[in-house]
Image (cartoon, rainbow, N blue to C red; front, side, top):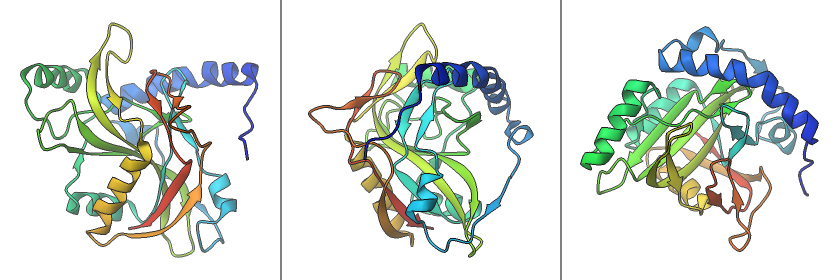
Length: 247
């Protein structure tokens, strides 16, 4: 079923109202003070499983600092924050540094010298006014900062009766680094087949004990012959589903 799109006026009002808060959120993120604006809110649910009713309440896309739509969510995780961090670490994923000016400048130097940077920062993306809570990456065999597997993860605040938290993630494979004179100045191009990256993430976690529970409809599908694109012009195609993974 086709997603109902908000009106142009509503989209503009949302951008105008959220953007100043996103700028403040980015500043706190870059200075390591994220917890100031990220209270650990909790919404308990009586649902025992990731049902279609619960999926409807989850964020479907992440957004740029200006409110433009970016990447679709293609993963749902069930587990505590410690379990998320530990499972990714055991699977060989590295945490990303904050996108501070220092780390961004170092990323540029590393790219120019073709060296490896396993904790290079991510472009800040948002759900409402909140940047990604967690960010993980795996550089490819060449070790270049230009190519990496990566995923951003956001907490939803929803807690199942098992006391497991529900998280959403957007995963894609970066194929090259792009430098430009307009914000965000440095960002990556992605492999358009984001479903392949979704599978890569799940497979790497399954090897360390995670369990893929099922796949659920999440966003609008996009065919390879008619790909969708994010606000930075990167094209992608997907079946619109999200894998549910128990950590």
